Image (cartoon, rainbow, N blue to C red; front, side, top):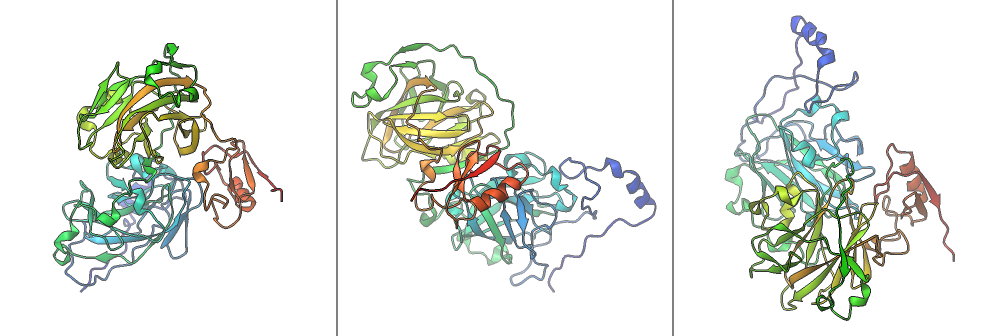
Length: 523
């Protein structure tokens, strides 16, 4: 006989009911927020996770999205099987409508991808009944906002797996380990530590690149029905990340901190001519501020030299080569970095990024072998990769502007906006030496220096085969300017709809939309 879920019982009327009503105004939801008068609530007896079923089918109610507890940007269809994020990149947390079963594989099909964001789907579980969570108290992000609370476990899906049409399955075993698979790949260990002695609901955050998902029929495959290869943390070669992927991953966390101003006494000095390639030296300002150094915290396989301005690989396997700047970067300043030494025979290139994590709070043992795993930390981490071939003597420029756009230049030529970051708080820059890049040097910084930025606010990073298409509907041509940021990424119809939404913001830079202006192209 199959296992069925019964309806959740309510408390009986009478003494307990009157006591409950007397305490109505003091109720809090599962994540500490107050219920509104119209909030959906239900109360149930303590349950335990369902036992592992035998091989074969299991008669349980279909797995759907919870109809009430969802992020403010979520639109759900009438079947409760498909959801879509209507705007922005966050506020899209969803839950399952019932507790899951141990080894029940939650299967999702990615139905929509929006390429102007970074980061992707967050998947996990919670022991908090979604029916007891006030939707108004849901945070913007599952990671790190929910996972920092007791009873929530989630992790970001690697971006290269978040393509339209991919089917993602994830499940938890009796030991609290969470696995996932992509399409027909082997199972991969995702994370562990989930408490399975209590009911668990699926947690799905439709975040960043992932715009829409559809729940497929779940499958329950007990461990004795699984092939041994299904439990491996090794990815199949076909699923490995491409070496030239520009955005490794980014976790855009809720970092609404007060902006701080840093007063650092900077000294200026002429650029040492012996540190430059004469071919590119004319591309730099005549003087650079020389207060920026590499931080003393570094990966064990990299060495800091020359008054903490040079980072050099010291290990052939390039396993842990993270280096940080000694201070946070300043808005609109350009950090110039020279490729001191490269090896064209080696595959790979330089990775870089920004973080809200003060390197002084880290230990060398905190620096991972795979820098992508940094996005699982509670701080903000954005990681990118230089896609242009790098040679000895090349000069890179990095600048974050007031809109939070991180721009990159290569030998004086702009390569455009690489990623949007939250610049409302201190951000340290970091680099990961890899592949052909054997040694880099910090040349210095230039405040408010030109970095050969594009003349138009339209970023070259979003140009290409779909650059002229509306980033919302992907059907109409872009014909609308967003005021006041100036980005052109919408058709007029979608612009009108977006403007009417509460807290409407630009899909690229996330600045508030004050107005939209229709444009007309000359023939």
